[in-house]
Length: 489
Image (tube, rainbow, N blue to C red; front, side, top):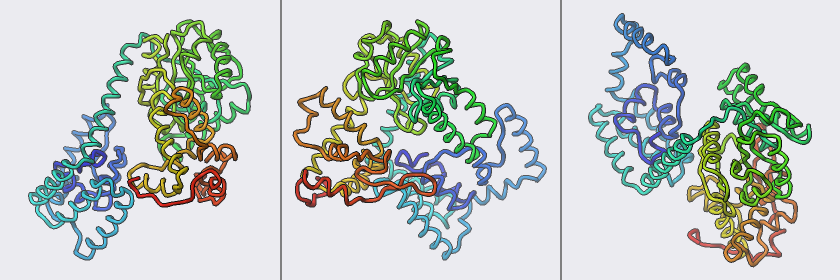
């Protein structure tokens, strides 16, 4: 995983691994920085045996005896690690040319470590072990002094700190979350139910309509089926997870749950009514949390008799893929409510960050000034495609127009209004934004197939974006004449 820190595997990693499992496989391991399961390492030839934890001693002794008896050719493997790569000049030229092109395309120009891995392996391909290790050390030192490495190491350390703080909160919890419930099924509720059940916490999934429950179960079933298809779960395990999701149209059994996550429509009146009603059906010590992305937790707590047991628990969509969860403290939220909610997020495999109650909380508070800058550029005549491309080249996974489509333009417009209400002097635009124009023309993004871009599903059911001339026609009356901007602008 060192390339994710902007450096390369030291201590002989770039020297030995290519000689054991081959250049192509080794580069993919190191350049991507992806974790590998034990069975994948065994299949690739990186390890000689795999053992369950309880069988480690027996398998180790058996492997040693196998080597002593001559059945394990460990001396040949050791010799390969000390010798040159088994490639002639023609093979090496073709192999490294192809690998560099592929790695360069995947990594982009902002991440030098993956390309440096390939350069080091190529430069040392005919060297002795000692000389190859020196080349690796020089490559490591060159990368370690770059701003990219400093930034990525900083991100890693901050991520570790975030995890430590979440663990500290979990230690403060006086009661474990053994059973949960989610209010509102659909895509979001189904995603929360899936994640909870998959990570071992049984969950009740309530909705007011059977269609909602069907959609939520369909979402969970879809995600689990993908794991089965990829060999990461057996059909029996999938059945166990699905059986721990209990769909219901009533509050029956809610008196036995430890936490309820409300995930109904983002409307204050609806949430007030649902939260007040739910509070009547749960234990006095149960935690009630709202998955709101914008509404004040302090305001929502006004409908409750026990506001100390209420907090925000904001998941991001899609729930199974997005690691961050904002746990929001209202004015009357107790430390115990925060501790138990963070503990539940930890158990779900999420990274919880505890934030204060303010418009936009943390993520949207940071994100929406960025969207404001994007809308300002479009007002002044910038091309939304050009802005996207510049941000992607700068290192972002997607530009602001595409991101807005993925999040949902209707969701974005609503959140922007909340931000403007909370910070009128700083967050209220003095012009009609391009995002509002898309919203007024019912272009909501991927969810209805048209936003800044238009979308059609590919053979795997994933939406693929295409450029729409209609977008430019809708924007034209409200924005300046198209003009080119410097990339730095």
